[in-house]
Length: 278
Image 1: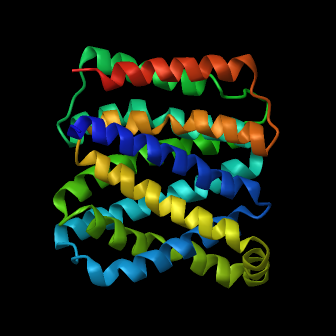
Image 2: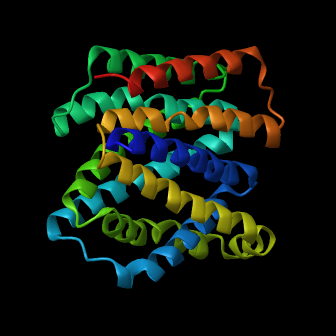
């Protein structure tokens, strides 16, 4: 299997896992505790893996800390967005904005570019995702989702540079996870200890599932970014929004309908153009 085909396979698997752990966060009435538990599980996984990976070099640590800072803003805006809006409203905007921004960021930061057909594919894919956005009079959810989407684009490019400069995907992933997974559980334990304990007692199975799928999804997409163009990987990853739409229909009883069907077809067309772009 070629590197490009392997990257595509890895990203599509990652997309399914990413939609799954986002659904775990949305399914809880206490999003802060839910994210804290997902991070807690990820922290345990990273601690287990530490003896088996090399410590990143100093320049890589700088990128890890930058990415962690952006990821914390992303988590904040994501929690806020899910507090004010439903899964079908928030998730398309969070995932529809990054592909277009990553193209620009990767061109400036990494010196990568896409062909005309690749650019068209990214634009079509983003259009398909954004077509799922529910326009309402309440703008707090989409505003926070938009900020979260900008953060996704930023940390995607930072992580691409970091994983390429590190001693391997696992080295970057493990130490990045160690740093990122500390603040929110610590904050939740200090501010909402009782709620966190109750969440652990009642939803520990979902928390374990969310933490494991989160780690796996991130690791797979980091691996893919070492094999292919970052903008391609970022765009293909956002096919998770169609999986998210299916999850929203099956679990949260949000209607699928013609709109989501047309969005799925549009996203599929964008994926084909991106996959076979020069």
